[in-house]
Length: 107
Length: 107
Length: 107
Length: 107
Image (cartoon, rainbow over all chains, first blue to last red; front, top):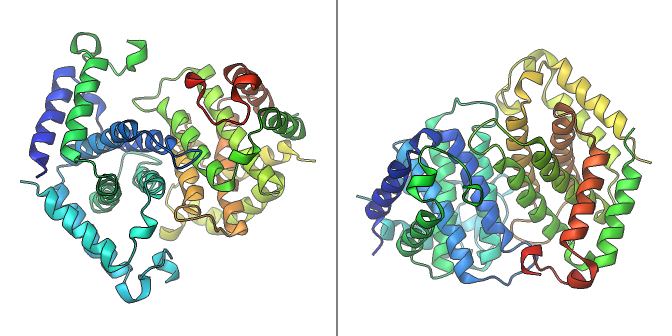
């Protein structure tokens, strides 16, 4: 079982203790997510071998900023992800997209 | 209350229905997270105004691929995020980092 | 005067001396450009202050991989950039886009 | 022969005609480079097949914003790239880095 509410609490505690809320504007968080995503990508820059512990840490950083952005924008993570999956299901109908990686606008 | 297990189920269902598991290698997911993070950033490219619905959709796409990567690597999201917050707390001691955005290696 | 041919020569010399051509596939270079772009972005993560020397170094790394990609794909930098400016000029007609940052598909 | 000065002239002309200089702050250009780098990466998201014309266009967009950033920061592209290659040569000595993709801090 994953306890997202516990994560949110810990993330807010970390932010509050350091007085960092002022830095966490939506724009700065969007930049931060891209920066951490690239640090994750760096583990796959030259090949397929990776250290699972290091990858886990970088993936955690991306999650961290994504959760912070949801908090700052007052978005319900469960709701926005389920909602987007529904939209993606329309963009990628099973019968057209089965087993192919074609982008929706070329399907 | 956020139900991450429901998200994971829906994400796996979406993937399975389309036969897309073969595309979702750790390397391809790392690329995908960077690509979606940049689409989120695009909403803040020229300024601070943004459409909350569009931002929510892009943030959802980043979450989607992050959750998929956790599933594929058999990582517990709750555990890796809490674990990384503990490491970050050591890198950024409250007394040194309060109210400043200085990177840990310059603190 | 900028001497791109001198840059290309130096970049190829650096690559050859280290036996790195085998790593520089188009895919790996595309990842590398994203990774270096994020390192550049990191200097603007929390605000507008930046160290010009550090920014110059990160921008140089992005140029480096872009030039390497052009070499590996046998693309003429002058030609592809001028060609793309022409396409952008059609997507962004002066009379519609003057002074506004609206994306072409909403103009 | 590559004529970077012609590129710079065309890029400035495009910017001036549209009154876009006000948008091209160093921070916005750093975001733009990351965004375009991800659009380039998207062509390699699921595999190694790519359309050379589309890749050329995306690579051109990255070059375009990089050249614009050099112009706005009054940086000499030739100088910063050659300077960075010298630094990289020290970080990656030939005898330690030949044929391996190990990062400098693990060499």
